[in-house]
Length: 178
Image 1 (tube, rainbow, N blue to C red):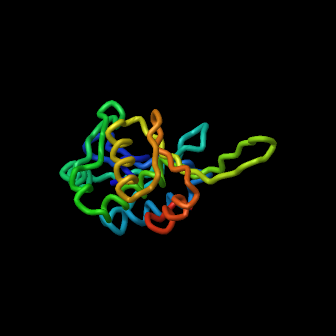
Image 2 (cartoon, rainbow, N blue to C red; image 1 turned 30 degrees about the vertical axis):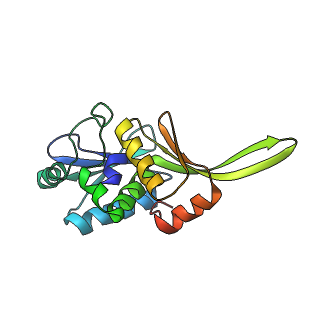
Image 3 (tube, rainbow, N blue to C red; image 1 turned 180 degrees about the horizontal axis):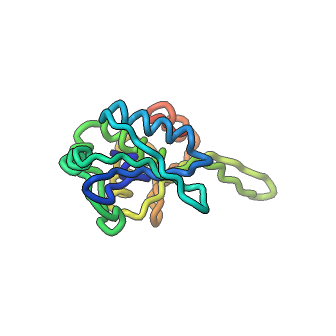
């Protein structure tokens, strides 16, 4: 669910798409294809976009789309629809962690923030999840706070700045996108 809420979508009643960068996310795209095969017994194909590094995993299955809609996803533009996690995800912490993992693996980043103060350079690893759906941002923030991460919402970003929380993220939530 998190992956589809992140870089995926239901553009219509017959397909599920998951977009990725063909250069930087090639390994992750293989993982995604395997997950779709394992969970839904579907073979997917990849559509490579011309003139850029973008690509899409496409799973053509009206049964899969019906299943995802039944479990709380929405067909169409996620930003215009201001999507959120389906309510059932909030029932179990394992579901919440899995959904956040999918969201951060697709629409998040870990980066080195560096700055100079009083002539000394400082470097910190930070997490940033970016999305234009306010309900989804609030849900991610709420889950991080429930798990006692020091998380902040600023505009269209949920961020974690504390290095110990970043380490804990990798232990407790984990990532599948290297």
